[in-house]
Image (cartoon, rainbow, N blue to C red; front, side):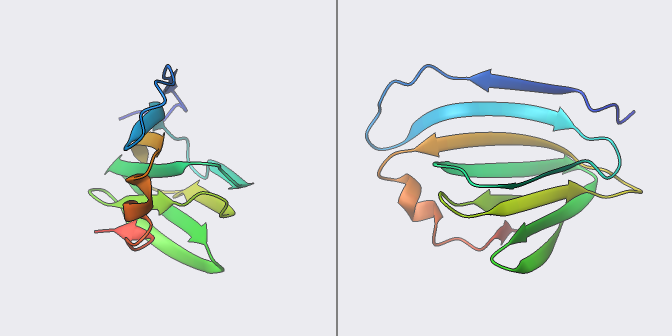
Length: 112
């Protein structure tokens, strides 16, 4: 795939669902070295890497992430992520709130 920085983001209509309330989702094909952050979000966000690799930075640690893995961003946590220079990633993401979102917070930073 040609990594040209293409992306699609969908802001979803807030239905105020109590258990699991999706609020945004999208896809991005990152250029080499593309980075986002540091940023703090008010909701749970999961990125699933479809192709390539990169690094996720949270809680003072760097986590390598590759194709077939996901990384978890918890609310109120400062995070940064960066695409690899040689094999940049393409990922999907979904952000959500709700009572059940707290259950995701027990997962590791990178889900393999």
